Amino acid sequence: MTTTAALPSRRLTDLLLDFLAYLELERGLSRNTLEAYRSDLQQYGVFLDRARLDPLAVTAADLRAFVSEVQSGHGSTAAAPATVQRKVACLRSFYRYLRREQILSHDPTAELRGPRLGARLPKVLSRDEVQALLRQPQGTSLIALRDRALLETMYACGLRASEAIALELSQLDLDAGILRTRGKGSKERIVPIGSVALRALGRYLDKGRPRLVGLRDEPRVFVNVRGRPLSRQGLYKVIQRHARAAGLERRMSPHTLRHTFATHLLAGGCDLRSLQEMLGHADIGTTQVYTHLTPDRLREVYFEAHPRAQIKR
Image (cartoon, rainbow, N blue to C red; front, top):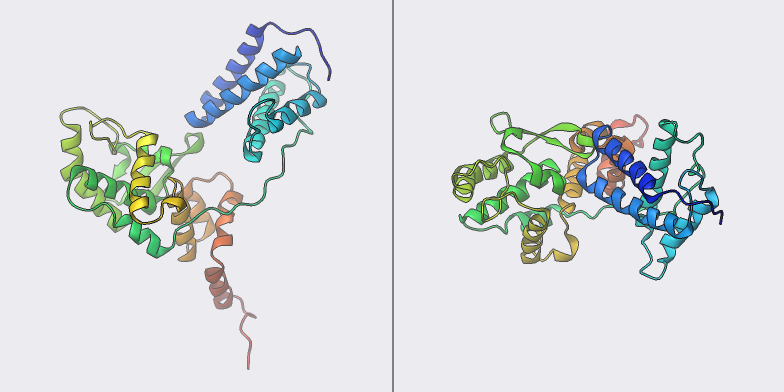
């Protein structure tokens, strides 16, 4: 491993802070992504300090040593392959930034690779399972009205957990049947709201939310029992409570409804480009994972559309 005179810690900190500011202000990355990158860079900084390495003079071998240390756990729990991949992506982004800013003349991460990940298809619910889940919020209590509106909206619009809890009243247009949301990279998209979700939202906004919020000026749509914005942990508990009641606890996470939304739309004949827009994917390749989950619909479309698909007898 190559060693050099260590830089002052303050200088390394300044580089990392400038990079994070660039990610937030120019790339518009989400708070969760920024926190993950901050954690990854702090771990990298500890490695550099311990090895007395200059971050502007590291070699490919030095970076491979860091990745190897992350994979082995270095005295603690070894990181999962997906976590290692994220840290590699963070380093590559950091050094590309330094080169773009002309702080470095080369990119030491050019050949850096993380572990290969096996293709994992998203977990999705069947139509019957979705119905079982959405039937769980029973009654007309304030929380039941909120939970029904929350679950219906997440399934109807394919919202991420962060998008659901950040949704504001100004982003809803119930008359037009649409909502506007900001996803990764602060990219805004417009998504239609189905009629069932519209009714659930209307009842919640009319009879539930005003009594939860009281006289407070609260912009968020979904609030807790104290009228404060629903937190990520609160959202998770809502979903798990109803998933458990429906017998789906082991198959559910906040993201499951988003995957199910995409799969059911594609199975119903939605084209990939439209689905990409509704999901807010920058790359259609990300959307294409759902084509693996609907072979029956793809086969049906093929035999309906291809001129030589039908065998003439």
